[in-house]
View 1 (spheres, rainbow, N blue to C red):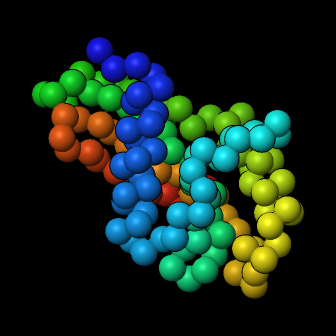
View 2 (cartoon, rainbow, N blue to C red):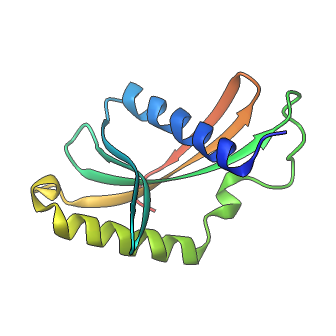
View 3 (tube, rainbow, N blue to C red):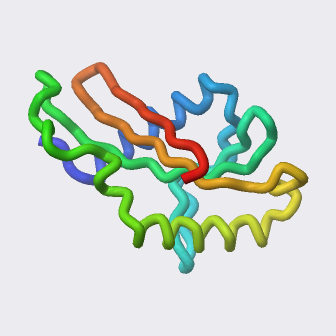
Length: 125
């Protein structure tokens, strides 16, 4: 049985690997402050500062146990507001990272299924 914490950590690691393969530069992971948490902070290949919220669902080895819920279902309007507030605070304290390209918020949805992860990347949510 997987715990919520271990599923989340595995999803974030899978997302970081995916981003690295796509030529993103990971700046920080699990940036936690009083004003909120950012799962992954990265620079996109075009040098845009990107705040990535990772949502993960674990399915069993048959990959069929969660047919009715997706990681995207957990990205609520409240979570988007909290992520935006945390991203704004981070961007305001790191103006050199923002640069000319600005910043955006992305979401990565991860379905953990045995050794096979299914990843969907949504830009500028």
